[in-house]
Length: 456
Image (cartoon, one colour):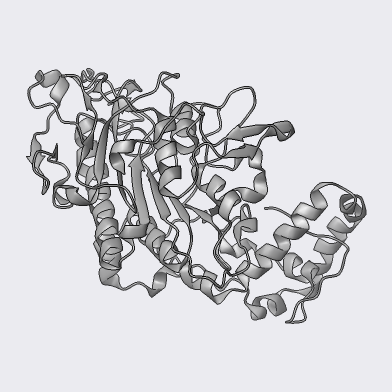
């Protein structure tokens, strides 16, 4: 947990000092991190009609053949066990394991020709699909949502970018996953829930309950003071002191905000609403994403999984600790089908889909040929993603792959183009330069990279 203690006094309207506030441990029970709280800016008196975005990251890498690019005429070992079904958009088909999506195909478009040429490991795909760039030379590029927060800030008392439920963790490599603000600095990191909203009794507590402070024993408070007093004087002279002090002020502002508390208050949703999204971690995160967007958060990232190990995910190698194609179709696909369509439908009914992009993407595709374990392995040569809402067209298919979905046949799309499309949809210039390391200007995506024009 970030410690923001300092010797300078700061007394708030309720009479508590900054030190009492922190030493009392009022931040600990929240299950929320402080990174990115500088995105909580002063309220803008003018109505904000900017486009928002919800990014659903399908950790593990969905198989293009078994999801949104079926090949019914391919050999059995390529096409897999599922048949394609018609959707409510003439000429567009999806796998039979997504019956709900088939009824809402007019609300999203499928980009079937995404590819990259980097190493076929999860981490590189995570980096490129969330930032538009591959990290190199020690330079970590910012997540799209973090760059948005840096450029536009948050609305009122809310952070600009919220990540649910947790950052991507162990996926087999030791590389960054691309969910932070990178070279922009930790103050621009996303605000992280760090909790499972589907857990029994989940409730984000009041963010600043005065009774909590008074209930802390004086003895414990004194011990905490003693532990930090020796180092405080030196810290006050450090370069990090001002940043942490600013973070504290923003944290206090957020935690004392009734609007911020309400945005995370999933208990205010009806049982019918919760059931609609599905009583799963991903389903309830999608429901919370809708609440956050409705409250004024600009960008929400939902990670469907935290890891690819010892859990049924999109990473369908077949052999343990992974799952196979059939098990994916029984657990992962229905979970996504229900939550994704509920989100699209709910946003549409509330008049939010017209100014909220919803993108669902993974880090790569899967090998066309089913392996002996009944699964498919990593394949960044071609895969499908879903994009819609806001200014993006729905009901179209961009690009096509060859007869085995091995490589793009028409309109190849890079991760940089995906990021550029999101930036354009958010009303940002994809080539806007940000101050990188040593204050060197770095564009959001490479200058030669353009948005996917067919989606606008």
